[in-house]
Image: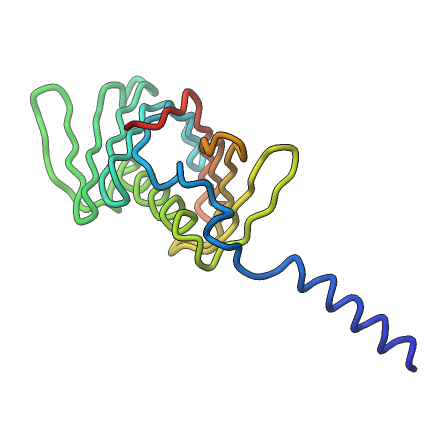
Length: 172
């Protein structure tokens, strides 16, 4: 009996060391800075590539390179709305009503949650920082280069969204 209680207590201690929130210092400061990156996006059965620039936690721009049906279409997000621009035309719409708007909303929510460092769990392995947490769309998994702070990938399984960041650059 004593042995079982001891093992349960030991197991509880081991499990609790892997839980909880990281100190804000565990999340690289680079995630809070303005940045730009190219993206490979898989959203459900749609595959796309785009340029992404985050000016601050509430403002960003997404410009599609592919597929051809979205090429050169720009989505400018300002927290309350999305302006969709294509050549000389532009319209302001609800952020949830288009692929670009939905993608921006999901990406920003996950990045902002990770940057706040509240309600997330950070783990390190092979120079990769993995930040997991919950946003309005469910669980997200964000990976960063632990040394440089560059965002590498974002996954939101409930939304079937996978984003790969490359040519990541901090804007000063």
